Image 1 (cartoon, rainbow, N blue to C red):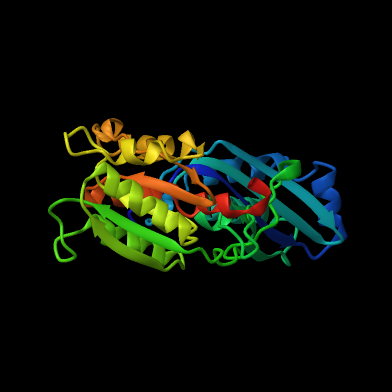
Image 2: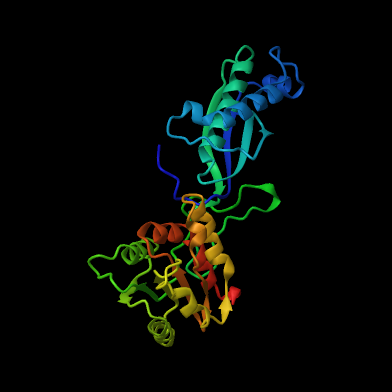
Length: 320
């Protein structure tokens, strides 16, 4: 199975459908009149579909077991077609598209089994994902700078289809490694940050400076004056005597955003018991968003996974 431990849990929804077509109007009448010998087709198939949703990972090897927070199965009859709609919600690290489609397929198969003594012309078709929302694709930032979330009003799974999020907005980024000892050859954290930014379509300038309060402050002021949009410092957020990055940056921040590093620490705490000791801060210095991330490669990577692409919503003009 694919490793999903680096993903962030979020509200994820999926809506799937299937169509069972019959060949005789009498079959539809029997279904609607609850006169099928095997029982109530709607209720039996709904129960089977709900069980299928919850058991998806038992029969599809690469599907992760996940908590199903909500599931609903509804029907609509159009002529000789019975349209099946299956909606599934979860708050987890991976989506529920397959669970919804599995539920639709088993619901249709159960109806087929119950109706085959009455109708030899049954057909199942169009088992498909209709809508999905949540996850990184659902919360990507569009090229206009707005969050590209799939709408979830009215209890539906949302209107954004898979893969519909537009590229992230262009932002000038700088990555600054705060260390007395690291060189471009020995640094891992800064390069990891550069790579993750690149994966989100963002290029960045990279530099290494000493762990000195005045040097860090001077670098931050210079980058702000040079109109950088996103400035990421890595290193100096721990408890050592030379860990002074938070002290250097905190006094420059005009608008603190405590939730940014709270999210990063919460994400890290699920993976290591020491994440709570990180003292990183974040906020705006002028028009530049400044983050102070851990200096370890793993800590920097985990912080980036926790924050991106969601943090890019800060560059939506409506949030300023």
